[in-house]
Image 1 (cartoon, helix red, strand yellow):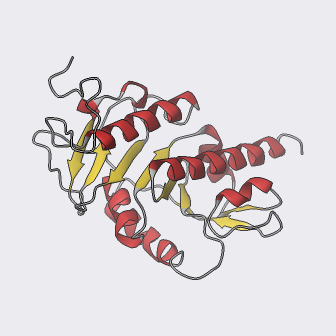
Image 2: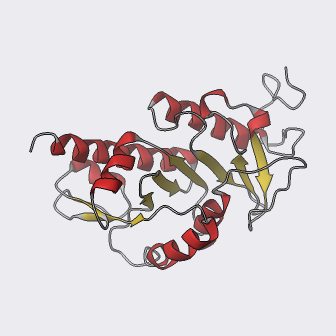
Length: 225
């Protein structure tokens, strides 16, 4: 067993790894990584997963770790600004995008990011946002009560400068705050993948799963034309 692994039966609210990450956070992230891998959304070492702790710090996957083989060593801590709180560990390259979501959405407790075929291809094939309409699955998104109301999924151009990408995304994400209108609480980076979030990991994963289903439907529809 690795020195900072969580012993069987130790995943209690008070248990922590040697890196200082609460066992519940590691368990949630490891389980999410396995589920996303099984769905084909995190090939190679792609994707990243995080949860927000009660003290405002963020438990997030380390850079370069395959999500199918996550363990306690693959999860680290950063502060709200994305600065590593785990000695010798480098966080995911897109940590600032997680930090931005937690800063803007006070209720956000988990963020998941995958690189699916559907998200990658559709976002490259279509200019502007992706508009979803007529699907019963739209109800997975906050405020959506019927299939009859179209939902616009923001799409941002990919950028290796993550701080600059945050600046581009900020106005559109801020527009999701408040109000009673339908809110996707997710977005797509063109040629890259999806981000989704929620108050807990189960909700974040459900939103990602719903979005991925809808994007796969849109991709399949294109083959019928």
